[in-house]
Length: 105
Image 1: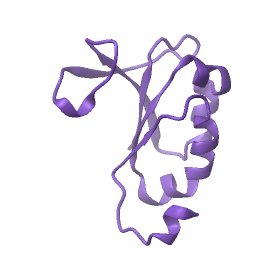
Image 2: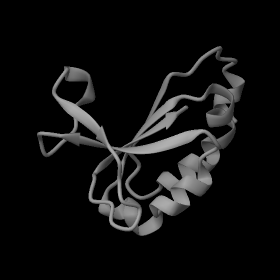
Image 3: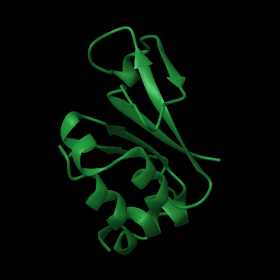
Image 4: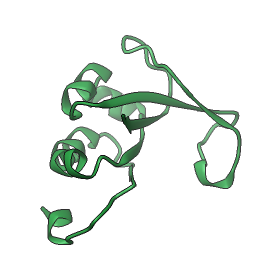
């Protein structure tokens, strides 16, 4: 609702880090994700894993999104400092990655 009132033409990226409440944020963002098709970077911490499985995440996302793990050579992810990172496929049954990229096709 808040985003729709801003009358934005474009949203490229949304970063979510809400310690286990990602499910509710994504449910609230569903219209925004459908309309603007932004990339979403989110932490997939233990608290998030307890409240949101990869299967549930796939069901929440609108069609045309893929889920990739973000792999870095450090214990924390800094995407914007040009450090090396790669996008990897994740195992929905055993996701061991701590950061996810939700990417529109």
